[in-house]
Amino acid sequence: MEERKRYIGKDFFKEYGLLTLGTMGIVVSDYFFKFPNHFSFGGVTGIAVLLSGVLGGTASTYSFIMNIALLVIGFFVLGKSFGIKSVYVTLLFSVGLEVIQYVIPFKGTLTDQPVLELIFSFILMTVCSALFFNLNASSGGTDIIALLLKKYTNVSIGRALMITDCIVVIGSFFIYGATIGLFSLAGFLAKSCFIDTVIESMNLCKYFTIVSTNSQPICDFIHKELNHSATVYHAEGSYTHKDKTVLLTVVNRNQAIKLRDFVRAVDPESFMMITNSSEIIGRGFRVN
Picture: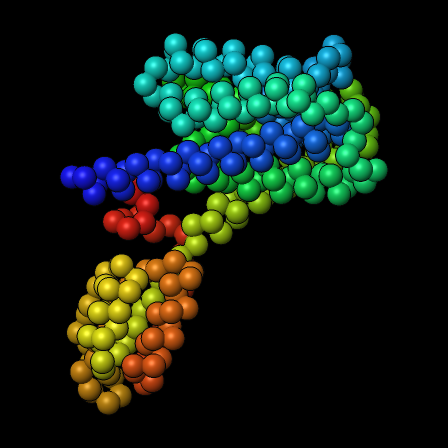
């Protein structure tokens, strides 16, 4: 029981540490790259950029007001279905974005290279958003609107959010001109295309199919050194008709190198098929 508590505590601090790091990454991306260049990829921060162009004031303040308002609405309307992780990220992001403009006053752009700043804004935003989704969290904003739509309407959430983001991008053309509008469109398209790729890359594991005549040392290595298990099939070679053992197991990328080298060392005649997989559900991996 004590060991389980330590494990849960360690897992808790790891998750919230990653959430904090990801949130700070989004804050840096928005404050130093996105807002000064008026990039509007969509979402609450995109709307905040448009409001700052129309009404004046800072995008950070508008983003803070909208996120807090949506957070309060989500808390009272959605209740327990409103995840604690999303609440944490939304609060930390909103407060962080509001505070940073007073701690580090910043006017103008960081460089005179908008393409470079677009790339860094996109990379930070995509990696951090993928990290949130991987931890079953979100950065709030339009995700809260999506939950509200899901509860009260039959509107397709994905389509509704896509339309909202498109309207924000189109608005950037009218408010900031063609150049900023095209930058915003490029960032929006890049975000839509690559965020799933980043999520898959973060979850990437190696699926091994090993055909061997010396399976026991391999099983022992998987159990004791890699802390995983395997499924064993007894088979027969179609050409030699010799008894074979087929091992199925999944390990992470670092462990894959160790397992591959060990199998080649203990059974040079073995046959291995190694496949990439990002959807591994079960004990030791993701539990849905």
